[in-house]
Length: 154
Image 1: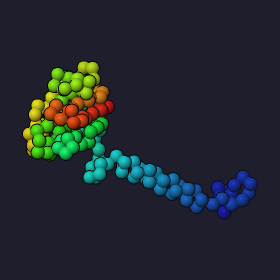
Image 2 (image 1 turned 180 degrees about the vertical axis):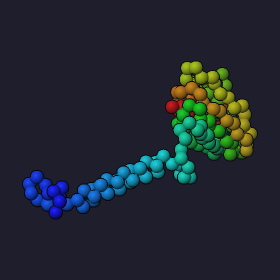
Image 3 (image 1 turned 60 degrees about the horizontal axis):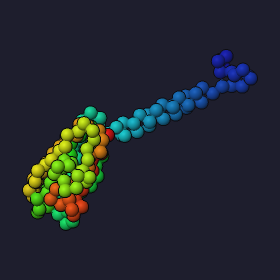
């Protein structure tokens, strides 16, 4: 027995206890690192890049005339793509001059209004949002039927 194997109280120390504790700490670190990597990955297995702008799809439906989803939350620099999947002409605008009721639309201070014009069936319109805030928009053709939406930009 070596002098280093004896504790202050005279009992024999177990070096294997120290090795087990070190191995356990290394195992926990590996688990935490693995979980961190998994959280940072997209569902397709690629590492998420926080600076990559996203495109969110909003479908324009006929019966009833609605935006689906009616509310989306995105980040500055992201794009919303409105797709007319119905058989009617649709429209997406937050411009108060194009709305029947100007109070149905709104955009944050400093943001210019967007207006798709009339979108025929099968066509789409895209807008990239560069100012934080809440945008309320309507389909000018179906505003009175309740076709309203909202984009929140963080």
